Length: 142
Image (cartoon, rainbow, N blue to C red; front, top):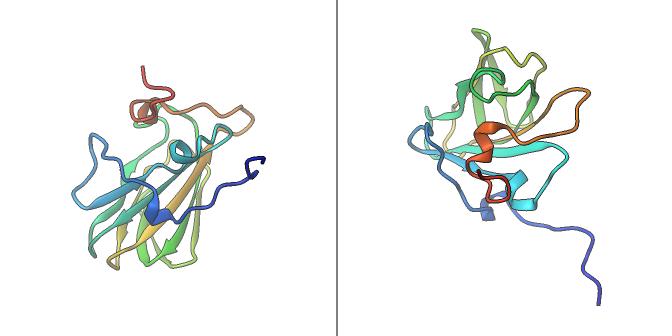
């Protein structure tokens, strides 16, 4: 019998990991690590309570050490994004695209249980795991 050419899971079934500067109550579910994805970066971030940070404030150059453009998708709940000081209302189903890797970005949950999916990579380059994420990935940890 052959293995299926796909894998199915629910985001809530992917184990959470804790990172160094993770705000209390923020959930990080490393989708890329879970599935062994090597062609693009992807993570799920969540907040247990209203008012909690879902996406920690960062740029992709300083904090992550990359030049990734990122696409965020509010899969569940409601959030307020802040990109370069501008507030963006983001109810469930909203996509927020941040092409500038230098742009500071963050998100706060407006509802308990908010979940945001993030996808990223550097335009024109093969994907490589960010130095930030390498610390948490057993396949790339140094």
